[in-house]
Each structure stands twice: as C-alpha cells, then as structure tokens.
Image (cartoon, rainbow, N blue to C red; front, side, top):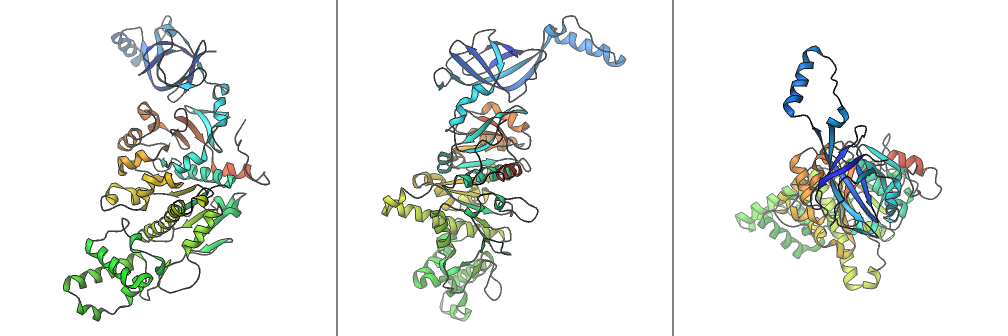
Length: 511
C-alpha cells in the first residue's frame, strides 16, 4: 500500500509528493520511502491543490456552477485535479540514522509509517509521555518514552498557549519520574494543581505518593508539612535578581548582614526609627524604603509575622535542610505557592533553589565521592519569564539563570513552563536543550522557539500553529528527529497505575 509518489525536491530543502486521490495525508503526517537498503523518513509540512487545467478555466467552471448550484463533472477528474504534499526529510536510515545527503528517485513509492519503522523508539528512555502522532491520528502501539537523566540535567522548556495542555504534560512527565524513584525533584506549584486537591487529580493520587513531600502554608493534608521560612535563614543574595533593588539598598542589605549576620532582617525591623537620626538623609531614606519593600515582599503584617515568613528565632529545623534531606532520599518535593503573593512566591523559589544549588556545587568541589551518588535533580516552575525574562535579567543575574548556564555540570536541571517564550532571552532559550512544544498561536512566540531549538524545525511553524490540545512536538539533541506526540491524559495514567501493586508499567497505552 502506498499513498503517493515522489515528483521532485532536494536533500537540503523539500521533497514534493503527488498524492493518491483517496489518501488522507495531512500536515504533520510521517511517511517513509524505501529504496534498496535506504529508508527515508519524511514529514509533511504543507499541502497544496494542483491541477492540469489552467487556472482561468478552473475559475470559469466554478463560476458556471455557482448560480445553478449544480455538481461539477470532469473527464478524468482524479488525473486532472490532485494534491501535492510538501515534505521534509527528517533522517535517512541504512545501518543507522544519519542526516540526508541523498534524495529518493523520481516516482519512488511513498508509504505511511508503520509501527515497525519505529522499533528504535523502544530503547529511547524510561519516561513514557504519549503515542506517536501522525497528523491528527496516532499509533497506539508506538509509545514515546523520553530519556530521564539526559533531559533532567540538560534543561527542558514546556511551551504552549493557554489551554493547550502544559500542566497535563508536566504531570505526566513528573508521574514518570515518580515511578522511577531514582531522581530528586522540586516542583513549585503556583496553582495548587500538581499535588492535587478535592475534586482535582494530582500526584498525590499516584501509587508512589509516599515519595512525595508536600509543603503548604495552608491547611495541612495527610503527609504534608507546613511551609514556613524564618528570616534568620535568608541572605541578601536571595533577593538579588528577584525584586527591584537600588544599588544603595543592596549595599544597605550587605552592610546589615555583615554586622548582624542571621539577625540582619530582624534588626532592620526592630531598630526604632529614632535611631536613624544618626545617619545621613540619604541613608535614612534608603533604610526606610528598604524596610517598606521587604515588609511587602515577606508579606509581614503589623506584628511582623507573615503567612510564610517569620521573624521569630524558632529553633526547629529550617525548611531548606528539610528539602535537602528529601532530595538526598530521591523524593519529589512539591511547594505550594498558590496562597502566596507574587513577590513572596519569587523569593521562596529563589531561596530554595539557591540553597539546593549551592549544596550540589559544594559537594562536587569538596566531597566528589559523595557527589557521584547524589541523584540528578530537576527543578520545575511555571511562568518562567518572572525569573528568566529579559526585563528581570537586565537588572542582574539570579540563581535560575546560573543554573540554565552551568547547572548541567552539577547534575541540576530546570524545567521551565511558559506561554510567552519570546520574553526569554535567546541565550536562555538555547540552553533549554529539550523543548516540549504544544500549540502556539503567536507568530512571535513560535519564531522564538523555532530559532532556539536544537534541531531544525523551521518548517513546522504551520503545524505548531495547528496543534490541538494534548498534541505536541518534542525536539531534543537526545532523539533522532523532532517527534510528534499525542500526550497521555494524566487521569488515564492514574487509572492504569492503580492496577499496579508497586509502580506504573512503562508500556502505558500499548495497543
């Protein structure tokens, strides 16, 4: 069975295919051409209507039938009216995959992809995320699994317009990591959807939920812990690159820390305003404005106690030490920030990530033997432009940018989620080696993702625009070519996992 024949093209550009009249080939479809021991993997990037009848005659024929609303009958219609598929060569395969330096011959038969053509996917990875997608259809017996360790260390970007399935993919991916029980994960949950709640399925419904530690400032759930940060555990650097600070305010924070160490914030708020009379007018203004700004960021009320942050000198173990212990035990830490204001949320994430990243760096430098047994760590967060946006980074670097640039050397990776990738600097986008691209309607955002991808996907712009909910393209240097995927529904994964006694089988969805 074949769906068309090759009628032209070039190895470095497009291949043109004339399709059979009854073929249902669409944009995004995968096709194959076999010639001898060479197999060409093709992807349809566009379709056109063609005819051997001159265009003016077509217009006349259509015009004559418009008023009468009669049917059009043409002699040899299937030979005179036809579709052309414009395709790109993804790779060619002989003994192994390689970039295409060849083209198929004229009139070579073009066949639909079969499951056997993708046997190589079985060895790809341990985290199943969906089925191989063929345009709007998908093969239920070809499951796409991603390589966990490579993806975790080399950063990921999940990007899509609102409602296209970003959070669903993230939960599917996280559930796969949870099943493996060999990596550390920190998830910042700004909408309370990853852990789950009443009426909302989340990772707490996973069979391996005992490996989740949930920190929340709200009502405690079974197995959850209070999200409380004491200001004695904060450094001035936690605020840098996260909130707007003048040079004078930074200098004041550094001076306070040098003089009062862990009590620097408490001293700033406890020192009476009358004592400021000894300082210059500019120093007074700086300290007063700094006090007001930190009170807002920390969410402190008049009694100087906040929902998450506290000035008390409580002697209980700090949040940061608890999280470090969880990571060492290869657990998944979910931090609920859904009840916290925007600036406080950024400070929480900055402080947590800074401590964990410093811990990994220190272990590698001073205890290399222990570093070898530390688990790979993934840090997942939404609304990436809030900490990695061009405007934010123009005011100074922060820990998220440092991890994006150098984290792979220390076994720390980030998974950033955003609706607007064009707000991220090009160099940061390029550091996100694996991109999960769901539907993007904005041309500017599509261009930002396409131009920063590790594989050539310039021709996929139309397809990316047309992607429906739960459809995506996975591009990564760790897979042979960009893979079109129909993502599993997270709720379906939970149903399947409930049948397993110990863990989720990696063959989800195999028909």
